[in-house]
Amino acid sequence: MSEKRPKVVILGGGIGGIKAAKQLAGKPVDVLIIDHNNYQVFQPLLYQVATSMLSTDEVVYPIRGFFRDANNVNFLLATVHAIRPEDQVVVTSRGEIPYDYLIIALGSTPNFFGNKEVEANAFPLKTLVDSIEIRSHLLSVFEAATTEKDPEKRKALLTFVFVGAGPIGVEGAGGVSELAYDVLKKEFHTIDFSEVNIHVLEAAPDVLLMMPEKLRIEAKKVLQKKNIDVKCSMMVLGYDGEKLSYRPMSSPKDAVPDTIRTKTVIWSAGVRPVDCLNGFDVPKDRGKRLLITNHCQVQGYDNIYAAGDCSSFTPEGQERPLPTLAPVALEEGRLAARNILHVIKGEPKEDLHYKSKGVMAIIGNSEAVMSVGPLEGRGFLAWLAWLWIHLLTKAGFHANISVTFKWIFNYISGARLGRLITRPEIPSTLPDPERKEQKERQAS
Ligand SMILES: Cc1cc2nc3c(=O)[nH]c(=O)nc-3n(C[C@H](O)[C@H](O)[C@H](O)COP(=O)(O)OP(=O)(O)OC[C@H]3O[C@@H](n4cnc5c(N)ncnc54)[C@H](O)[C@@H]3O)c2cc1C
Image (cartoon, rainbow, N blue to C red; front, side, top):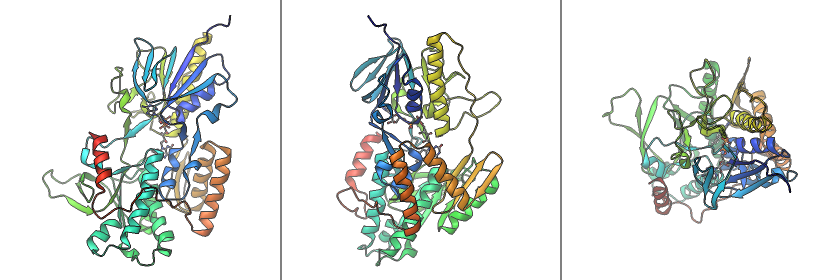
């Protein structure tokens, strides 16, 4: 009779979860990955789907596809509802799943900081579905603007606001600018493109705070060149689907807020752990992320590990936890899996030593800023480096070839052929009641 092998359950088939499973592939353990999507999303390229640069299958990879040659790795399409460590089970939409070892890599969800009105009306950019929704919406508002006679309403249709000036906001705003001025302007012959307005609002005192100051200044120059208005130290107060209100952080709470009339607010102002971890009673940081040890173990449980955005680890001598970035998720996923194998073999565990690989942000065609070790750069070379690194990190040889060709084609032709509106109707100038209702239900 064959010996029972330890069962490792991995929650989340994203960047960290897949990395962990790859470490365990072919090893004497039974692995089960649980995810509510049957694909892994490469989130750094989502804005390119939203702005019609890439198509959906170019930024995802099927989870089962990673493990064709690893019989010991299986997949369950299910939603995780809760973890019951006292019984060593995970509660899912497909029943209770027992585990011997657990790796939690459930990522994060957009953080609206409790503002239900904004949550109900703004677009998050976190999932593949979000990017498809934004793509449809962006294209639809241009279509709607062609027939809108009222100048105020037309202006609202042609005004786009990104909240958050981290890489997602900056890259997204750059992408919308290019879509509008370099692509749609050539085809929407009845729209006056001087009516297009793109704003980025940020609560922090500057854009891309993780970059050196010199590059932040460069990034702002590029944004300005792309007709993007950037306002920092601004707090967003509300957005009802038509009017966004905000005020300077320094102004008194009762000051009359400034407003922007817009049909499009894209929220990229931070993330928080997913809701199914709320009831998991373990030590967490201020942002409710699971505190992990330097072995990637969840504090208080020897057989539960966590990796990526849902976990929080502050290296010795540092004040802030590691950032919610793909390289951190990869490193933690790798280490969690390796430490499980060490424990099974009775070997000492490895410590987490994360070394930053640097930071970069792309701001449209040929423009990027990067800070990698002593190297700092801006412009075409930084842009090529961004493209290259993202291709290397992304999963899927076939998709990488098509992404490379698509980028070259887009660059040379200035075209965006993936311009699909997958919603049934173009929006009216009032908030789409169905969407609003649905989002309000989700937010409540
Ligand atoms: C738009 C965008 C741009 C980004 N750009 C960059 C960048 O340029 N560079 C960089 O380093 N990082 C970037 N990031 C951050 C990076 O993508 C994340 O840090 C990384 O994906 C975290 O990996 P993870 O494994 O923790 O979570 P994820 O990769 O998000 O994986 C979590 C998985 O859990 C699944 N899941 C969640 N909840 C449940 C549930 N209840 N039941 C079942 N399954 C569930 C999800 O479907 C998902 O597959 C970006 C993020 C976004 C949103």
